[in-house]
Image (cartoon, rainbow, N blue to C red; front, side, top):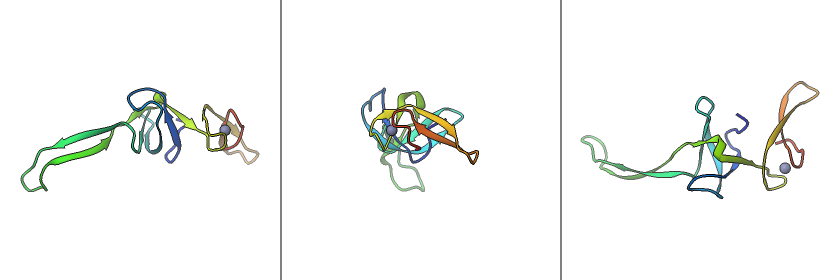
Length: 102
Ligand SMILES: [Zn+2]
């Protein structure tokens, strides 16, 4: 998983194609990401005894990571990510277009 929580992504497939949003959570096992404001589904809640009445809430449905692309904040484009190892031995993600660390 190259995409991390807090990244800005562009949706490249599906109903919200062309929209950008911030990743709110990632699921490495299922290879999905949740993005704020993207893939919102309205959930109709039935009033339950003991709980506050019914209504409609909006929930973000996870998107497959193959449907999103990382948005580079330096070149402001959807880019592929590469990785490099720093002299200190840490792995860093780099933008393949402008080569800056993201
Ligand atoms: Zn870039």
